[in-house]
Image (tube, rainbow over the protein chains, first blue to last red):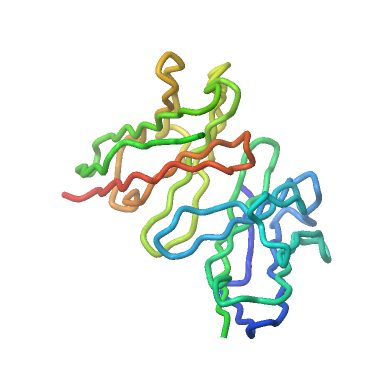
Length: 109
Length: 116
C-alpha cells in the first residue's frame, strides 16, 4: 500500500501565506489521484476543504486553494486567520483504494 | 437535510468483534457510497474502506483485509462496519462518511474501546 506524506507541522503568521504538501511513495501525485484536503479542529469531525485537486465546497474560505506543485498535491493558505489553526489531512486515491497522509498541524502564530 | 447518525460507544475485550452502524437520512441511500475512517486518540485519520450500498461492492484497505466487513441494510438506510479480532490498537473513533458528496457529510463518530 502506498504511503502518503505530509509535513508534520508548519507555522504561519497571521495574514501570511503557507503551502502544505502531500506526496506519494509511488511517484508524482497527479489529478488521477483525486487529491482531497480535510481540515480538522480539535474535537470536531473532519470537513472537506478541497476535492479533486482544486475544487472547493461552498463553505471553503476563498483564502484556501488546491493545486499540483512539484509532483505533489498542495494546499495553499493565503492570508491566514487564527481560526485556520487546525490539523490538515490529504487523501489520495489509488484505483479505488484511498490513503490519508499523516496530517499537518498548522499553527497560526 | 442529510444526516448520518452512528451507534453509541462500545467497550470490547481483545479478540472480540464490534459492529458500528451508520443510519442515513435526507437522501437516497443507494445513490452514494459510504466510507469508513477511524482515528485513534491524538492520531491521524485512517481510511478503512468503502461500500456501494446499491451493488454491495466493497473496497477495503489492505491493513484491514480479513478483519473488516462492511455491509448495508437498504430497507432501513443503514450501513455497518464490523471489525473482528479486536486488539488494543483498534481503540479509536470510527466515522462513516458519504463518499458521493465529496465527503461533505460525516457521522458524529463512534468510540470503540478495546480493553481487557
